[in-house]
Image 1 (cartoon, helix red, strand yellow):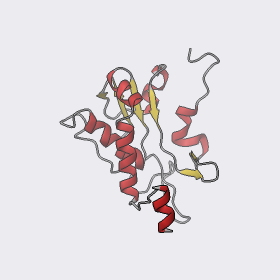
Image 2 (cartoon, helix red, strand yellow; image 1 turned 180 degrees about the vertical axis):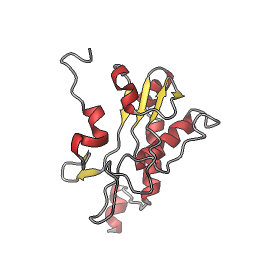
Image 3 (cartoon, rainbow, N blue to C red; image 1 turned 90 degrees about the horizontal axis):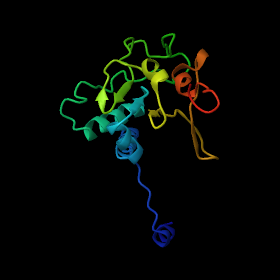
Image 4 (cartoon, rainbow, N blue to C red; image 1 turned 120 degrees about the horizontal axis):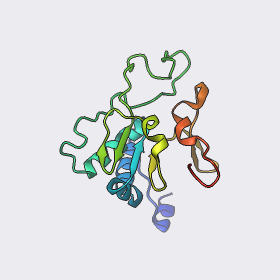
Amino acid sequence: MNAHRESTGVRSYLITPAAGKRLIGVALASHPAVRSVLKKGTLVIIAGTTNGYVAQEIFRALGGDGVGSHFSRRGFARGVTVPPGVKTTEMGRLSDQQDFPGDVVLIDGVWKRGAAIFDVLDDLQEGDLILKGANALNLARRQAAVLIGIPGAGPSSPPCRPWPAGGQD
């Protein structure tokens, strides 16, 4: 096995889930499309455990001092996938996470604290971004997906809403 690794130059590393989420956050915060929309446009980060790290890294990229100083990853999830028997609220949140802090909505780099995607959905334009995390994988096809566990599609419904042919009215 070492010979194969040496001949291909490929190395594998084990990291914690938290470190993986942090790496996703760092990568997205430096992505050109994200950097661009932070200057002019709307960026919506749908609440989720990975997206909490994404939001922290984007706030850090915006300057960190004050911009996102009140942001916390705690409770920053719309719903969770849990084993049978674990009690959740009607909206799929853990019972100790009753208060939803909202998604992160940034307009021209300014945080609209407490806002959710529903507040800006009708105002989104071409070039605006919605970051929605995945919670399911199709390993054979190397695809990420979203498992919808409640009627009405839960947090997936706003970004998946059909638009009229030719774009938004």
